[in-house]
Image 1: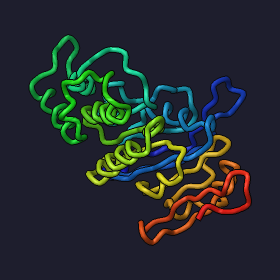
Image 2 (image 1 turned 180 degrees about the vertical axis):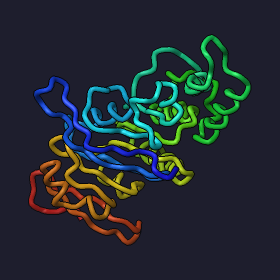
Image 3 (image 1 turned 180 degrees about the horizontal axis):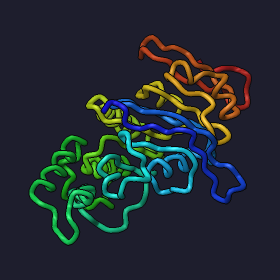
Amino acid sequence: MDMILEIDDLSFSYDRKRIVLNDICTEVKKGEVLSILGRNGIGKSTLIKCIINLYQNYQGDIRIMGDNIKDLSAVEAAMRMGYVSQGSQMIFPYSVLDFVLMGRSPHIPMFESPSTKDIGIAESVIEKMGLSHLKDRPVNEISGGERQMAMIARALTQEPKMLILDEPTSHLDFANQINVLKAIKNLADDGMSIVMSTHFPDHGFLISDNVAIMQDGTFVAQGPADEVITKENLRAAYGVDVMIKYVAEVGRNVCIPYHIGGSGMML
């Protein structure tokens, strides 16, 4: 099946008074990356929690590979999509291998231990994510970028068709942001569908097939990055003035902010 995610007329409210999400529609095909842009508190994380079926009291339909998410058991949903939350602190000193192996839970019957196959899958994903040299290290002692890669690896051991990532580069330095984005792009190139929220318009230009800009709980613009990430749309969404400029040396558009407190431009 080519269509992985379909969202039709999704609306959500915590208290039935203030609308958080309003008539959201989108779709993601196999191997596509959808980036969701918008201010803090605009509803991006709430949308993600609806997609992963954590919030169920919404109006509208969310379908994963043709099936309504509400009709799937937790195990069935976990076999179709993996979720990576915003960066979090690790308390327990699990090894990276044991931490990643936890992603096999949907495939392991209750009261049984991971099989040789499960361990092999976890080790294969660890290698794919470039973490083999860390697999015996405590996950709470590795760097933030390495830990984010381990969280993505844990989700991948579920063998999903889609990854849902909530601000996957938050709290990371510039180099680790690029490493995580490269990993996401490689996964999409291999056929994984990706939905990710982000604060950085350039992420849309770097790795996204489509971008959705969220404002007032709905998508006010949606489509290819070069069509959606415009100075007008970013001004409306964030209330800031930017320039969108094509840079021949890198072969893509970039988002350039104006000087803070000045009238000149950063060129």
